[in-house]
Amino acid sequence: MSDSIAIRYYAFSGIAVAVLLNVLLRAVIRVGGLPANLLVAALIGAGMAFCFARIVRREATAGEHWRLVAVYGGTLALFYLWLVGMAAWKNPPSPAALLLYLLNYLCYPLAAWWFFRPSVIARFLPR
Image 1 (cartoon, rainbow, N blue to C red):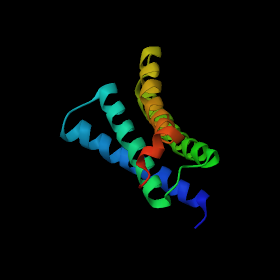
Image 2 (cartoon, rainbow, N blue to C red):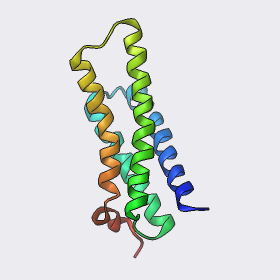
Image 3 (cartoon, helix red, strand yellow):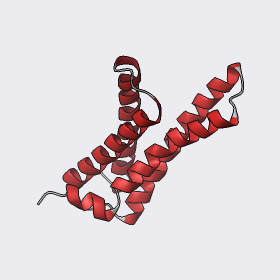
Image 4 (cartoon, rainbow, N blue to C red):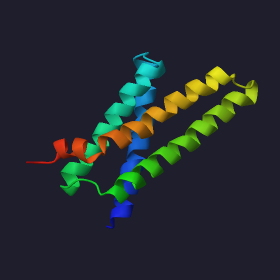
């Protein structure tokens, strides 16, 4: 399996976990807002970096790092645009609501970027 295919699988797995954890936190446990997004984003970023480090047994190269952030962040951006479009279908969101959508979205690619940095992912490597 080539590295580009593996990176795609990490990104899409992270997206699936994001959907599941958000549903779990918001519907079942009733935790919401930006703190819930920060928690989910950090868990997913750390989980993806941990799994990558344990399976591949090395740090991500710069290309893999940016490819993962691009695929993960880009796909989530499409989901958030769809969410904003669905919200705007009934009545257009205010600029403050759009800012909240943006802040909620940015948690995910920034957490993935943070945990895949060489200094952070090195902590997940097996000794």
